[in-house]
Image 1 (cartoon, rainbow, N blue to C red):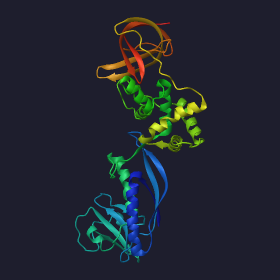
Image 2: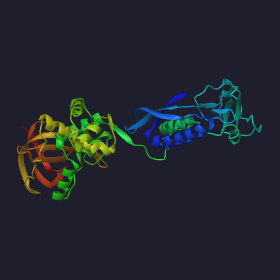
Image 3: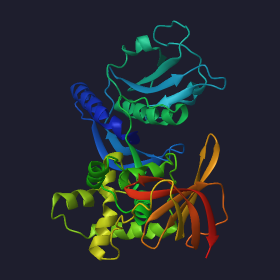
Length: 383
């Protein structure tokens, strides 16, 4: 008898141990091994978090251990208005057990029980017994029931929102979506690796978020004050696809390339892999000479409280909500690449358009490793 199950990957090791124990028992009882074979994997998305859970697809093959000619058939769950719930061990169960009342055919004691069990002998004689009498008929555990139990644990998580295995499940994200957002961040802010983030921290006392972590946070819409959430889009989907195709044809001539090829060979990655996965985009660009990494060239302008008049192009405008209302941010760049930021009420501006700005320098600050000049009390005219 062979059955196929889908179980959470965290359950696999425990299940393998259990099946081995049962297989040893089966060998002693009936001289037959029970085997567990991994045949594939499947990813199921959580509709709330948008993360993916990995299910391992397995086949369990063998005969359930017998005892004195009796075999475990099914669990009957009672106390349902329209009959019993039948949890079969992979066998056909006579229809009568769909509505049979609570009883034990072995001891004859009829009392309240949540569950009773169906067993049968070699002559296809069926009996319904309570848990206390089950040991008299079946002195082993059905491996298919253990596998089914693991499967039910995962399904239970869908309904109750909790995970009932000994360890927390590993969460996965779609690598194409991740690389899509990674590329957008690199275009806007340049690529910040862990090493680069540490260098910036040593020089400026402020450690920016790495590109990998920021892309990961964007997958789930993690909110920070003043942060613009980026979503996957069609344009960058092509770049992600091209980069993944490119890495497939590279050779693993060092440990880094081996790790990159290995991680990018899967459609899904976990949090431990995001740093290496994010590095695929700049690696692809360097190899194909399509673009160079963006350099951080912005410098501070003037001094706080100083009035300035300057021409600059509006690069980006976005907003975020606070307890005091909505704040709108307008990010300009002058002809030297210096960044000016004005936080104010909504304005009728256009991105990629040049404006004449008269205002007061409020302060200097650094954001994601870029020097920015904050403005206040501005008058802005289109050019």
